[in-house]
Length: 467
Image (cartoon, rainbow, N blue to C red; front, top):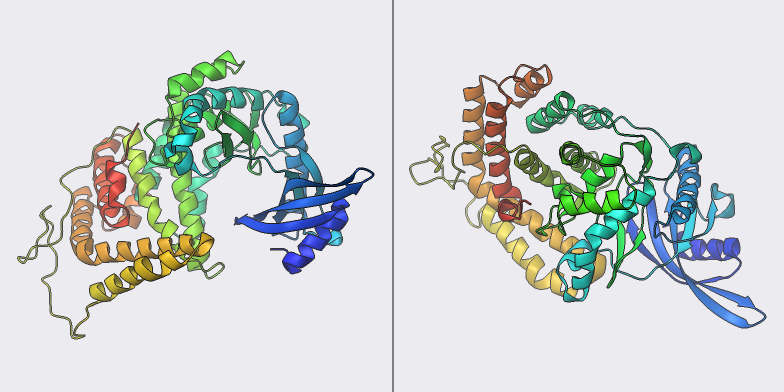
């Protein structure tokens, strides 16, 4: 948590807020900040009282985190004035002289649910599911009334400055994302009015009660931009969490736009929302690669971050669904004894390994079963979640051991069909515009590769609702 540990943070918070901190517990830890809950005990002439609060502390120690906290405090105040449901700000600090952290923000703790899969599935949220699409439209209309020039330090952002430079820094070669970025550049619609954009408005950052939306959380990515960005981000496939609706797994884009415009939002054409859905999909895939790189570089070793790297193909598949591109050819299967998969790709003939039994696949299976039958059932909270992630990662390895050779062979055949030596050559050709006129043909081949990757990474994703 903070540098001085939980007890030190509790004491520092109590001193800063003029009370006693109880039950300080960490809720989450992102790349830039840690979120914790606590109760603040206050004494006055009437006795003692307790107030449920949330503290967010930045990990950084430079000027950037302090500026973000000041900006977020201004945003929350402006959002409340605009009628957006947000937690009220209690206190903040922009320096570690107070012992809390490099920069911190304390807000009231509202009651409700944020876990998307619970909101989309549990019976107690049924009424909320029916109300949320329209409530999100009205909340976004209110957010977009905030004057971006009235928020000190609110950045402006060119959306196309994000995905590809990040991939270049990583050295990651993803032809499908190159194709998505190229499509975005060639089909970019005229910009809408410049407004305050939340930047991450989606399930997971929305606090929900039985009646629906109770709070809009996590404003750290807010910026000045196009209002359609928030509408498209909320409607992106990554944030449907298996739900049937296009808007956060809940409802239809037409209903979202109707509520948005009825609440005073500027009219937004569905085609503009679609462009921003494609943008969100390419950007989220890039973010997944960035998160995996934190593990691969050794900066933050984490089985969760490592597993996220294999989710890039989910967004690549989403990209081709959004673009209306069908995968070419059938999916691969495990090779037959003749050494050929169902798709007809040549794979190496199996040579008996010199290691004896158990094989690599059998060892992976044994460890996965141990995690399922022993570790997961004996663990709680974060440890149980991480054990589940590790179990899923081993399932990915099992499927790759079985299907990998056939998938590699099928992908190599597609590259030859396109006249490319490897993925790097294909990515470079796409970026240079060599396939602008026949991009659908290339997209169909890349969609087939994304589908085959999903057979290893997450086969169930192929049968998830697509609208």
